[in-house]
Amino acid sequence: MKTRSTTHLITVLAALLLGSGVAVAQSCCVKAKAQGKSCEHACCKQAHGERKTCQKCQAEPGCCDKAIAAGKDCSHPCCAEAAKEKKVCAKCNPKKEDKKKS
Image (tube, rainbow, N blue to C red; front, top):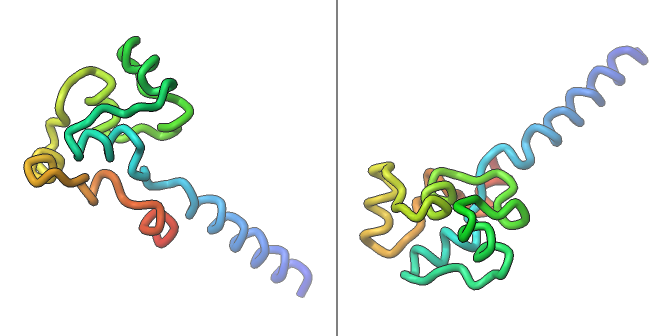
């Protein structure tokens, strides 16, 4: 009985740990780019000046974050289509609420 409850506890804890942070969330830079602006955070400005992603705001940078840091537009067709509509690609940059559901 004790082994069964221990196994259950480990399974639940693993699901909680793996379920959080697996997907990439919409970053400040991606949201700003969708609005036709640049991110105003000093940390992001500094990182982009060095052609890097901001480790503070993009702990797990997605395709759009990497492209912004390189001074380019994301080459994914889904992201390009969303950018035409001044939106953020929901597939590559899910909202934080969507991230928790994954």
